[in-house]
Image (tube, rainbow, N blue to C red; front, side, top):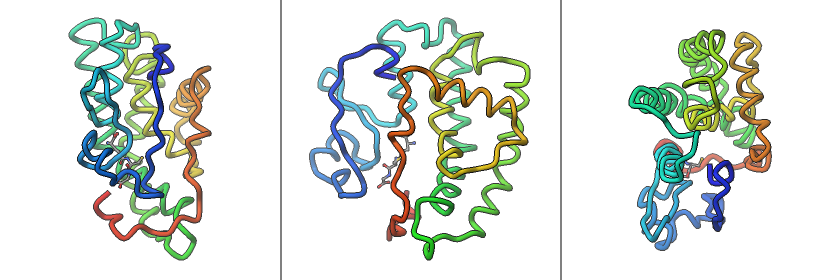
Amino acid sequence: MARELGLEFEHLQVSFLDGSNRSSDYLAINPNGRIPAIEDDGKPLFESMAINIYLARKHGSILAPQSLMEDALVTQWSFWALTELERRLMEVMVHSTVFREEDRDPDVVTIELEKLKRPLAVLEQHLGQHGWLVGDRFTVADLNVASVLVMSRLANMDLSDYPSLSCWLDKCLSRPLCEWETQRLPSGLPKPDDWEHR
Ligand SMILES: N[C@@H](CCC(=O)N[C@@H](CS)C(=O)NCC(=O)O)C(=O)O
């Protein structure tokens, strides 16, 4: 979002791979120790989707909702992605491509893929009728939902049953300032002890 808005920002590398997300400096910004978080005008803010909505609104971008109804729909799709997709896609991704082979549980992948069918069908239906999630332009709703669905790519998930969704995801990920490939997690990571708390 910062790139989409043309903002000047400093990106500090914080990672759970080296434990820097548990440093006292980072916990002061996000007490959950999760990534990402921002500090803006000296004020900390966590939860990526809240950050994206805040930045788009603050900078008067066309990516921000332009009416009360658009605002409601951006909230709807963002909450939906967090509740219906995020945790399930994360489980599929880590047990497909991120964890070391011996730590992967194929049953988790099968179960979560089954549970993902319903929300993915909802998205497919919407995108079969509309080019974008809200209004007829790329908005923070697309950015938020695509930032979760990118995990399907990292998990090498087969999305051929969802052609409109796949086409829309391509459009989002091929925006000039989007560098999702560089965010790829290394594979072969050991299963973290506290995975169930993530
Ligand atoms: N809903 C949160 C998810 C944040 C999240 O789970 N981040 C992961 C990395 S993608 C993380 O920080 N994991 C490290 C940990 O939980 O210790 C958001 O969108 O900001």
